[in-house]
Length: 246
Image (cartoon, rainbow, N blue to C red; front, side, top):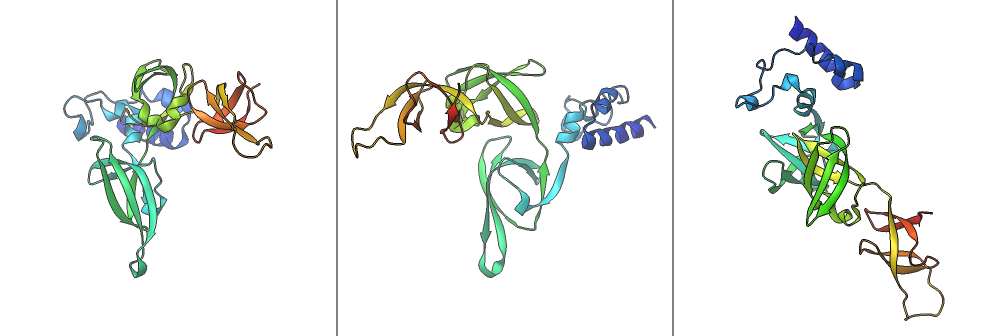
């Protein structure tokens, strides 16, 4: 009866995200040695003792046409992160989805095709907030904003936006089975103009934009009325100017 009650409470918690359910779960869960998954047979954590592990190994069936880059899908017992998903027409053969996938375990990339209506198991991932402590070489050192646990991740997870990563910046990671899959930065970061490159070619009319070198070494286009030393907001995803910071 206790196992049945725990199962009901867990199901409600997973889909309502009511904090009171999570707080009451530990008192209902069975001992650590019960109901271990096959993957836990070598001493792993019992799924029932980790509500997130339960939800993370759950998924939802969706049509392949609904899969988006960044999603994690399961196929023949293996997990893949979707790098790219393109809708293609095969003439009389109907439409299909061409996907570039990355094996979560090995990092190897493969390309697979799915029918647009083909059922795909999309796995839930966890998004958690972190704070950047510092960067060194090609590694970012982060700290969990909730548990204060430190984590090292490759700067590649942030893509070209990693150039804007600074000490104390709030970021978020998408985790699968405790492993970081992707990282996101704020859509607006503060930078300082260190240099301005004024073009000496072309018409004498003052241009609307000028090239500016920021304190992180990135060159961007900014309005011509801005000067060296000014702080500005930049979108790190495309290096676009947003506005003055002050």
